[in-house]
Length: 393
Ligand SMILES: [Zn+2]
Image (cartoon, rainbow, N blue to C red; front, side):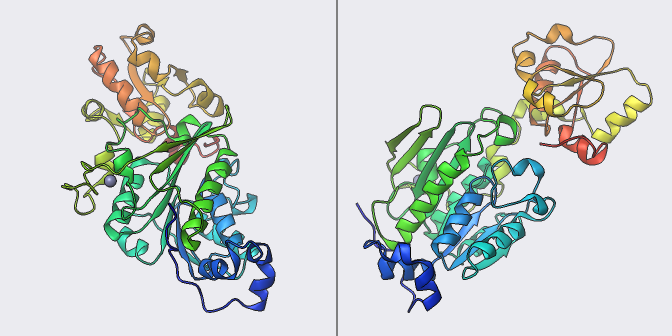
């Protein structure tokens, strides 16, 4: 089932525009009318990272008249493996600004609006209301649920995508015509169950596969051509080279768009809703947390520290804190590695950002190591505050 075009056509195309978009104009289904609709469209990309990079490049090239970019992050060298809108000379600069420069190079006719800020519950509705369509390329569950809730509350459609290692998913959520993200995923996964791309990795080119699906859907929605991915989930397996489409129905019990909604406004705290760490881990780290600086002071003062890095071997290959021993979290949780921990030393755990080490700390304390502590912010904090010469990832 097709849907009517989301955007009214602009009054006209200039001679420059007609030349530039000629390969669109000669497609009968797009034509002058479709290109004018693209010109009039205002699309917001949430995130100028893995998915946002290819999405913004193609939205700009396609002639979307106004492109908003919201991202508070700066370009890091480890982004360049997949975030193709940024280059070497952009490292260290804000992603939103770097993306805007690339867009100007590809299509100076696009009006770019930079939101160099973090999307939060206080600004999300106001920012979304300036656009016809949202393209969501966020990489965390807290922002994902917030994007969904704001879009549903405002009645806006959005194109969602997610990527992990060799797997990608995409769909269009538009409450007026189909299910929302909460209909598909009513609850966020338990903390620690689904690793982020920073922890689990992502094949760079997967971003292009899923980002291009997102742009394809955006163009269809704006111009009203084809059958949009509303009520269908596209699942892509790059290793099998297989695309599957799964029907997603509107859930009458959905907390947000169901018959008796319990969520009627944005949540107070999405981080809390998605639980950065589990209750057990939260209890374990209370009063048992040190900073990276404190760890360094302990080491320098000659304190007898047993430092366990609970990350995975591949992460250990990238960087490590001097004096650390690699004991992956899974081996602590299963109990297999408990014998490696000494009884007579100060045990300190660290991971990348402090979430996995909190979980490992809970398991270790439950096994009797009551004095163990973990490092807040993990090796990321160590790189930032103690040793910036270590590579980051
Ligand atoms: Zn719903």
